[in-house]
Amino acid sequence: MLHIRKADTDDCQLIHDLAWQVFPETYKDILTPEQNDYMMEWMYSLPNLHRQMADGHVYFIGFEGETPVGYVSIQQEQADLFHLQKIYVLPHCQGFHYGRQLFDAAVDYIRAVHPAPCTMELNVNRNNRAVTFYERMGMHKARSGDFPIGQGFYMNDYIMAMEVSGL
Image (cartoon, rainbow, N blue to C red; front, side):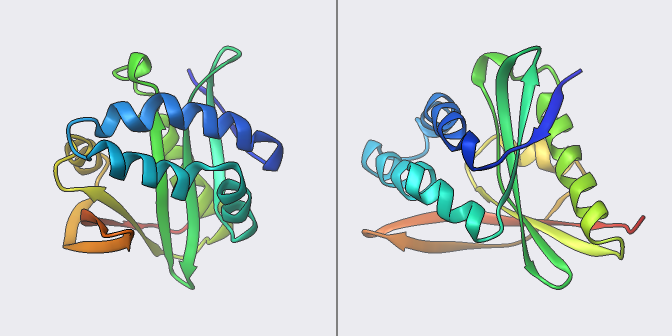
């Protein structure tokens, strides 16, 4: 069983370090090295992680014993809309249902802060094998698009969604 705890700004370095282990590996066959580097700075530089937390991103970190193995981030975007911003598990820890446990922690968090029914969405690259994981979690492809992120790069994503029931 994974031990999951809410992160705070003292954990930004840990999230940064985990991201450098999992993000490039996840996208090595999908993104160019240049886009990977750009996205790592955009999403995971220490100043940007601090800014995300100040802007309402809530991070949770999963631990196997004392070892961090993954993280998830949720942000409320509208009154009844939450966005699962990030969910990653270290490559050598995949297949142990840690992703499911982090996903469930995000849903539990949403239910705790928003007891009425609402929607959770996420962006996932259309070529990412995680699409099937999200479908198994109960999400569906709501729409897709090519979203400019700067420097001429795009995120070519599905927007997946699911309804989160109230408590």
